[in-house]
Image: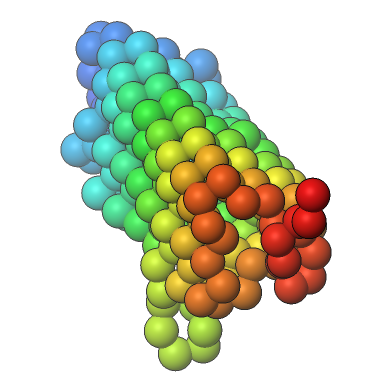
Length: 184
């Protein structure tokens, strides 16, 4: 079974590379079948991409990324080292470069997700959705307790905890635990 899996993985990687996708190290890149990946995208070593994932053009994935079912990366999106996604949509040129869990989330265009960000989507009974609008900046170590919305061009300070239902309005900066608007 392991040999058959390696042969199939080799075919998948070969076809992707022929279509214009760069796979830095095919022997450590794990892809399930029928994952569309756009031309110009780069898959770095130790990346795992499950079925029901779609990756646009000119995206960067990994190393050590895990893209689970329901993930969509729009053109130019980047998911980096030790980032796990599930039912996550990252808009054009959105970035989550380091150490994050992004589950049940819609992330707008040109959003920056800081290192150590967690979308806490499960309350013990149900999973909830989080929305991060275009241009938002989510600071390192932020915890977003779903359901919550981070507004357009809003910012969360490093280490902030945005509690469920405490939406961050457009253009607002929040800091602290629990997160509160920063007074200027």
